[in-house]
Length: 97
Image 1: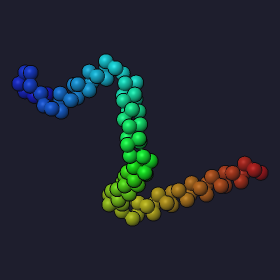
Image 2 (image 1 turned 135 degrees about the horizontal axis):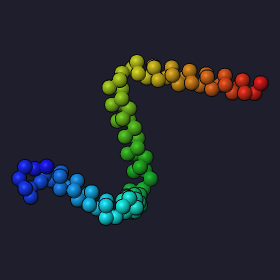
Image 3 (image 1 turned 120 degrees about the horizontal axis):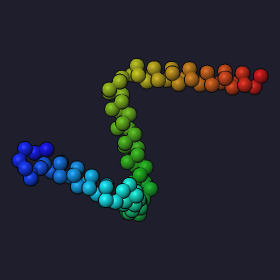
Image 4 (image 1 turned 60 degrees about the vertical axis):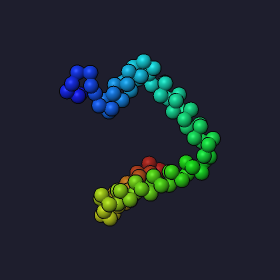
């Protein structure tokens, strides 16, 4: 916290206010206002808005992963996925016998 008594940063004040609100109203309060906000956004912008931000978010997230881990990462997870599929197919064949 800030060194002087009675003084706090904006971040500290926000955190304190959020904790107080959370204790006072509980998780249902946040669910309710989140739902209202989602409905309002949906009415204002329509389903295309969610498609667009989802596409941008997925594309951006994929780019970050690509830059962080590189091509080999995708090779490795692809191989692991293929091995898992192979294992599940073999397990299914054994179960049929």
